[in-house]
Image (cartoon, rainbow, N blue to C red; front, side, top):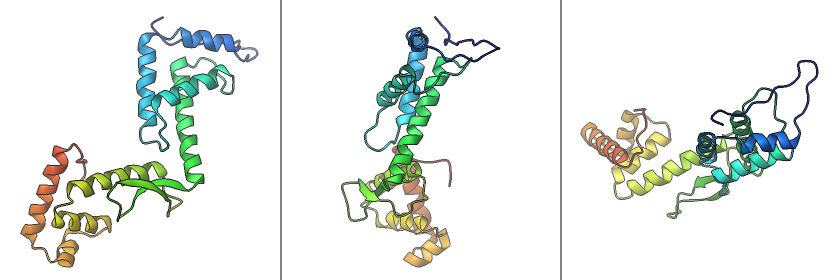
Length: 197
């Protein structure tokens, strides 16, 4: 079949699908649908702590659909149904990580990168903390030999503006601007530059 399989229910009384229907619908997915699910699973798994992969998410979603712990709603395409399960699994994984108080954060004296470290801000979104920690580790490695760049990064991390950073570290406007251009070029070269200034 070339389109996602949907199921129709009686308008009189909703009926839960037997597991054979779910299994049949999964087996009936087109190659395109399967590729779409794998790509979506990889995106959903990106940055998950604990080594959870896209294949893990997709396999768990299929398992939960087949064992009936997730009910297939009326008129929902199987691809959308499995995508929703994967989203729930990802969110569940992050909630568990937050409850356990573990997220990945850079340790200043650790040159090895990221280590498991108790979360000092329990209200922080672990996904964002992890992404920020990864970015900071990469930036620290990129600019390890550039003291001016590291000072600018430290100032920005503390919410300081350009004038405050220059005054704090005794940088002229030219030194600051030159270092910022050098940093931007290096970030662009490594594919790390964001859209902000």
